[in-house]
Amino acid sequence: MLTRKGYIESKNEQDADYIIINSCGFIEDALLETIEETIIISKLKKRSSKIILTGCAVNLYKDQFIKDLFEADYIFNYQDFYQFFEINSYENSIYRRLSDRKWEYLLISEGCSKKCTYCTIPLIKGKYRSFDMNQIIEEAKILKERRVEEIILISQDTAYYGLDHNINRKEHPLEKLIEKIYELGIEKIRILYFNLDSLEKGNEVELLEKIYSSKGVIPYFEIPFQHLVDGILKKMGRNINFETIDLILKSIKEKFNDSVIRTSIITGFPGETEKDYLLLKERLLKLPIDYLNVFAYCDMQKAPSYKLKNKVKSEIAVERRNDLINSFEETSKNRLKRFIGTEDEIYIEGEDENYYMGRIWSQTPDLDGLTYIYKDDKSKKIIELNKNNKVKVRILDTFFYDFYGEIL
Ligand code: SF4
Image (cartoon, rainbow, N blue to C red; front, side, top):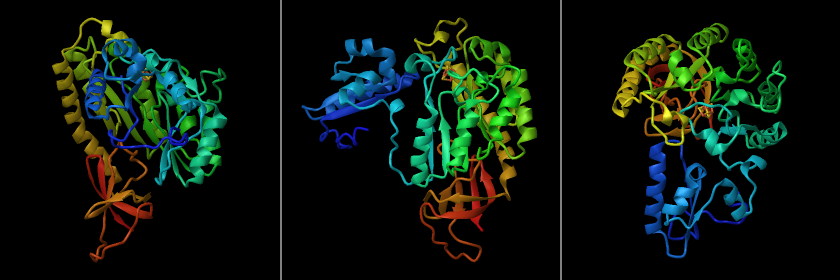
């Protein structure tokens, strides 16, 4: 939006009139990085250039920054930022960065109205606001014109899309949105951050099956659970129990034979005993999960969980995280071996000396590893390919989240 307004982007602090630091305030480390980065940049910049500190950390700590962080010339929350440069907020504009890749993210809402106690996003971003469906479709049209083939729907909570306006839950607004995107000719639609808490209680299985049976939807289920023990889920403010999680995963595997499931887990949440942790691990390893992210709980002053008692020492939270990752590794490796022998059409996204790189349908960009394709065929003849060439591959082997394949 700034470049469209006439500003020229510079990667060099010495050239810039404004240096914009877009901060993250989600975890304590990000906050420290914001402060450190602002101080470092203030020493590198030319005298006349102005530092603008903006982003999520400012939304949380604006007053403290104004008081203590003299290195920043302007401390802007989002609204101040848009006003200063006289640009539209991205919620009210359709603008996509130019790129030649075959997939793109499509943001469908902003904010969150859930009350997960470890999370500051509702404070940072405000209540859930679904973007207007027509605006999203306009944006999808632009992507289609740029030959994007896969759209990745993102939001703080995709399963809540439209429910802040629409109380008729018979047809979930997400189904309508997916249908309209598919009608544009986009045949691959991936849904991330699908929060089961947002589905009507008792109807979770039915609603989820309907949404994922919509034309174009990739059977890739990214469902953050955060924990699998009821007492901890309750303390986390997650409105779901293990029985429902188990039921839903079973139904996914029954209904969508070829599906892939990814989740995220937090270890060391306040009150998590050794027994809770062992139960979490036992359950996790039995569930049909393919991809996993594990975070050690990190206390944030502004998060409601900050006030909870029985904090787990951070070393223990980290130890449990590492143990969970290590235990899961073997399970995941074995599960992903089912892809050996499967075939898919993929786009070349990069290359090194020996391999071309791309992704089969089960691999989400930046999350699940890559498919490495041998550059030569069986007769050792090099196959010449360029970025965005489409090729059919067969998976020959897997190495944790990465796959190895041959061109057919
Ligand atoms: S649903 Fe996600 S964004 Fe919303 S409060 Fe919970 S963790 Fe935070």
